[in-house]
Image (cartoon, rainbow, N blue to C red):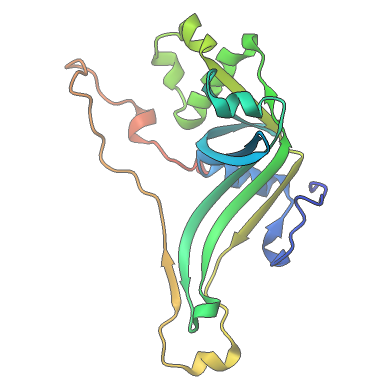
Length: 218
């Protein structure tokens, strides 16, 4: 099964890099917790970086109930994008330099999660990143839930695009004495920085020491 191609998701260039396969889209969404949401205020375009999480065929993001982005996006047409840089592609000509990447763009009307469902969705947000963490945290306070708004999109109008592999040079340029290849790019986690106010006998749990940004590999 693939998603229907619409005027907004139809690829104008490099069609071979595109995909409308839901699982491909899910894997890219799950490989990074960061996204950018595009929306309009008074007819002017804005983009805001935020964190997202996926549950089935829906993607969610949250923010302060007072956030202008959240208020303007509620019930409005928005565009959500995730892009992951995997490498710099170095060719034998400036024209053929490129990048290896994975990206997803989703279009749709953002809906507001009902108040009675917000706590469960926020727990899902935490669990998507750190499985098991909600069981050791203090419960969310009513005022914390009230101060948070969660928006969602059904993944029905979306496309993925990706590039991998070596450069594609003009055939005659392969005889040139110029190094070409890929400089891989990865996002790595550093050593834990313990809160100096941790209790003396508290240690980092497995969901911290074994944390991975890429949820598609769990």
